[in-house]
Length: 220
Image 1: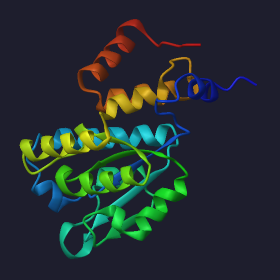
Image 2 (image 1 turned 30 degrees about the vertical axis):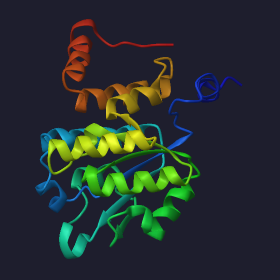
Image 3 (image 1 turned 135 degrees about the vertical axis):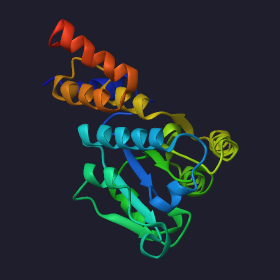
């Protein structure tokens, strides 16, 4: 039987597919957002939630983690929790999530070697687990527009450090469309375009406009 997932994986093994990656969300908490100054925080939240919905659409395994939720940083971002209401959140004491055994066990349990990561702050709670995961043989993708640092320089320096060590920078929209990749994948077409409408800015408005003026669009 024709399997579009198998075909795309065989044709483009370097790309992300629903079957080869996991998404890690690290420390999206109030205290961390208060200190974020690298870009607009509302835009960062939009990117985080867009990425979360992309993972949900394609049934990609996710790991949610916080640091010192009860004693200092506060609960996980409510909009993120709403996307995964049944998902257990792993709370840690370590700034480096990769030094928390429960977190590492959860990542290993996904069985995936491509890790897509987003978190706050870029220069602390993203860069540390990224460098640790790279050393252990994982292929790591950093969703830069869904991360934030205390300043633009801190964020950019952290991204450069990760890239120089082997991490791959990406954006949440790039991840979504890489997972979809073929508009003939009808089982996720509607959900993918809905995520774009909700979080894709001008591109999303363009889809809304086209649907209103041209009408519904079917593929396949």
